[in-house]
Image 1 (cartoon, rainbow, N blue to C red):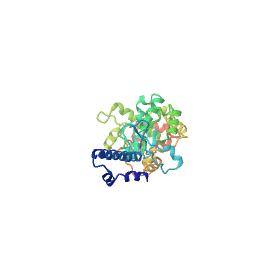
Image 2 (cartoon, helix red, strand yellow; image 1 turned 180 degrees about the vertical axis):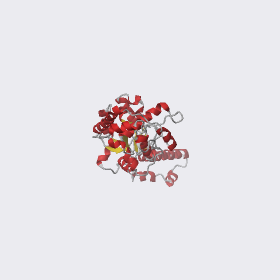
Image 3 (tube, rainbow, N blue to C red; image 1 turned 90 degrees about the horizontal axis):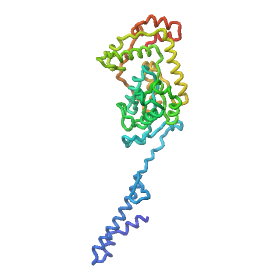
Length: 344
């Protein structure tokens, strides 16, 4: 080959046999020049192999982006596979590990906090909490999109953030935190950016109502040593919070239950064109294998998931409501009668 011929002529014998004895300095200069030429050639070959090429201006180089291999997935999955490039750090050897985007869409006191701790127990999943609880982030569509972009580009750092090898990233989003106010724009973002929605609701809306009222009371009362906690990690703390029994407005009870049902139905209607799954807190609490369906939905390896959170309101609802007899009378003979007896 031409390259072999070029290097073959620069042998020790050729230089020593033909060089003039009276010009050692000239001989040395020729050797140096030829060695430099060989070095430049070898360097150019190496640069091409590592993906660096020169541009028009001499001495200037640019890095060519590494091309990730096409993953072995079904064609319908392609829009949901992403390779984010965070600005705050490098994904290093994981830059070609695909990432799925998700959002947990739920309502307050529906088990989303517990559910999120379960997901974050997975090595490859990062769910970044209730980020739109901060009002300025949901002030308008622009701030919502800006926040979503940061999360899905892996530039949102929180206690839930994993390493650069995260395989699924998301957060929990309450329906009253911008979702129902800007449904068209949110759905369009999910569709164009390949975001999957995980809906999490409670079947027993009466239990949810009790939890909402008790949590709202504790915001002011701060029953745990002067500190408000929405979630607890010990049976003792749960027992303290459960001592408060809210008084339910039975005049508005059925209206409020219907309102929650309508909001749920409307949200599902808005997002019917997106990739989504629907979960209920009670189903997961009674059967943890339901979590495997979630992991399959996120396309991450199956593993057992654990949470340190402890349920606050356990057992019969009659132990957790101040005016239980009035609530019973209000719901008897209605479509919500079953809520009086269901444990979860």
